[in-house]
Image (tube, rainbow, N blue to C red; front, side, top):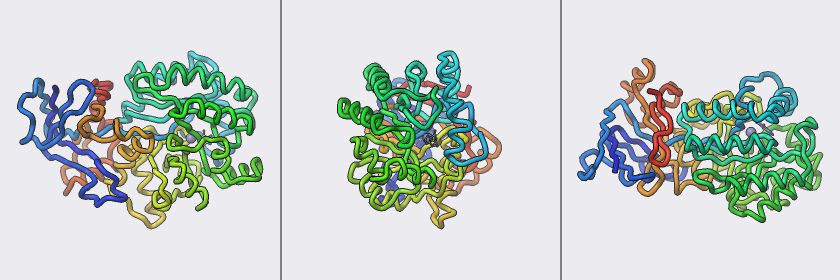
Length: 428
Ligand code: GUN
Ligand code: ZN
C-alpha cells in the first residue's frame, strides 16, 4: 500500500441534484491510500491506516484531486487550433478537412499523437473521448500512443462518405470493415475502448449510418460518438438532407442512440429531441470554448440536465482553443453567466471530473477519489505560479480555492498525473 499526505478534494455526488455540501469531500490535511491500481482509502490524516508501507508527505501546497475527463475532442485538430474566421461549416471546409487529410501519412499521425497525449497529460486530463480521422492507420497510431502512455481513452475512426473532399471520403463498406477491425483490436484492451464515430449526419449517407448501426448491433457495448445541433446552419442542412426527421431522429433511426452514445454540443435541440435522448439514455458533451470560438451559440445546461440528459465537458480541440479543463470550466461558467445563471465551483469541477466520467459510463472506474475505483489522480500545486499562490492563500473556503484554480490555473498547476496507480506524467 502507498499513502500520500496532502490536501485532498473530490466530488462524490451530482451538485446539480444534491445539496452542494454533500456533493464533495475535502480534507485540509488528508490522505489518499492506493494499493496496486486501486484506491483503498481516503480521509482525514488523523484516520490514516497505520500499516502503511510507503508514505509520501506532499504538504499543504498540494491538492490531490481526480483527473479531468474530456468528453469530446479531435486529436488530428491539435495543429489547427485558432484557425479563425467563419462559422462551423466554413471552418470545416476551409481548415479542418485539409488538416485531417494530412493524416493519410502515418509519420505525421505519429508525431501529432505524441504531442496530443503530452498536452492532455500536461493539463491533467486522464480520460478522454477522442475523434481520429477517417484513416485506419492513423487511428491505430492514436490507440497505440494512448496505450504506451497508460492513458484511459475512447477513440474511433471517423466515418464519412459525403460532403467532404474526395480524399476524406470512403465507401460505407470500407468504413464498416476498417472500423470493425479497429474495434476488434482495441475495444476493451486495457484502459482503451472503441467508439463508432460517424462524423455527423451531413457527412453521412443513409447507407453509412446503416453501416454504423450494424456495427453497434454487433458490438452493443461499443460507444457511439458524433456531433449534433451545434450550429443553426448545420441543423437546417440536416433538415434538407433528411427531410422526414429531426436531427436526433436521424441517429435514432439507425440504432445509434443508447446510453453509450455521446453527442457533442446539442445547442439547438428541441424539446422532443431532448426527450428522445433522455429516453435512450444518450449523453451530451458540452464544449463551451468551441461554441464561443465558432460563435455556435449558448448551451442551455440546466434545461438539458432537467430534461434528464447527462452532460460532460469537452474541449472540442481544435474548434476549442485549449486542452485545458481549467479554461473549459471557466468558459462553461461564462456561457451560463451570459444567460443569467451562475454555476458554482463544485458544479464546474463535477462536470470536469465525475460528471464527465458518468457521461462516458466510466463513473464506477474513475472521475472521483473513492475506494475501489482506479487510482487515477492529480497532484495540483498551489504554489505553481505567483498568481495561483496569491489567489490560493487568500481563499476563504474550499469553494473559493476551487474558484481560484478554475480562473487562474493552467498546466503549470498540474504537478503529477497518476493513472491506475502509476505515475504517467510529472512536471519535475
Ligand atoms: N461537426 C462535424 N465535424 C466537426 C468538427 O470537426 N468540429 C466541430 N466542432 N463540429 C463538427
Ligand atoms: Zn467536435
